[in-house]
Length: 185
Image (cartoon, rainbow, N blue to C red):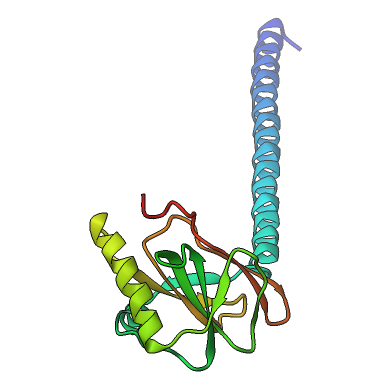
C-alpha cells in the first residue's frame, strides 16, 4: 500500500476508532443513566405502593368526621334522636362536646359520660355551650361521625376543634377522643 494511502487509512481508522469509541461511551453513559432512571422510577413506584397499603391499613380502623349544618341545627333546636345514646365530655354544666351514638354501637371510652337527655336538659346544655362560645366569638358546629365503612354512627356538637378522631375497635365498637377540657379558654 502506498504511503499516502496508508496515512489516509491510518487517519480514517483513527477517526473511525475515535468516533466509535465516543459513540460507545455515550451509549454506555446513556444506558447507565437509563438504569438509574429506571431504578429511581421503580423505587418511587414501590414507595407509593407501600404508602397506599399503609393508608389502607390505617383507614381500615379509623372513621371520619364530616361537618353537617343539619346536626348543628338539630342540637341548636334541642332535638333528641331517640335512636341514639348521648354522651358529654368536660364539665357537666359547660360540656366541651356532646355526641350522640347509635344505640347498636358501643362507645369505648372513660372520657365520655353517658347522659339521659330530654329536650329541656339538652336545651340547658346547649345554651350553656352557646354562652361560652359567644364569649370567645365562636360558633358551635355539628359533625356526622362516620365509621370505617362510610356509615353514619352518630353525631358530634362542639366548638371547632383541631383534631377529631374515631377509631373502630371492633364490630360496632368505637373509641372517640374528646376535645381538650380547656376548649373554652
